Length: 164
Image (cartoon, rainbow, N blue to C red):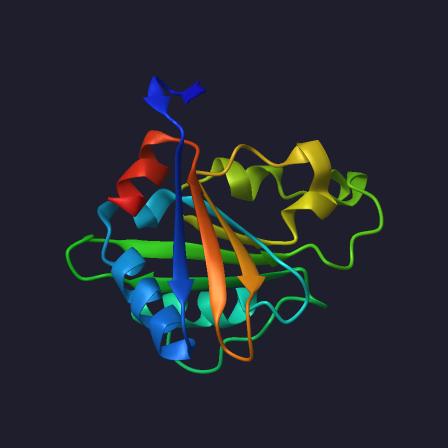
């Protein structure tokens, strides 16, 4: 299977503990294509999706408390990124509470997903076919108390660069 003339890339990694999650987030934050990526996160409740997002946002320079958007559905952030020369807009979505994929359309998220910036999406399956194809999918599976197996799937050239 190819997307944008690039082969689909699938990797599996292990996060032995939260320190490993943080290290992966810091590495991802250093990739040039992170500033305009869409990353989907899948996994059961408690798998570590929000924990990963918090580490990624901190690595990108977000200051203060980073809230889970479970009730608000979306939490926006804007950070000045050294070397980028402008403000990076970031949106953290959590569609867990959606009962119907049409809620995504009714919420008016189409413009956000069409705009530049980083989009992080928890529970993407709840939005159904309304979401654009992600650059990168992180499927997180709990292996033990702190250990996680993460399957990384790059769907685009930007996703492939994120995994480089």
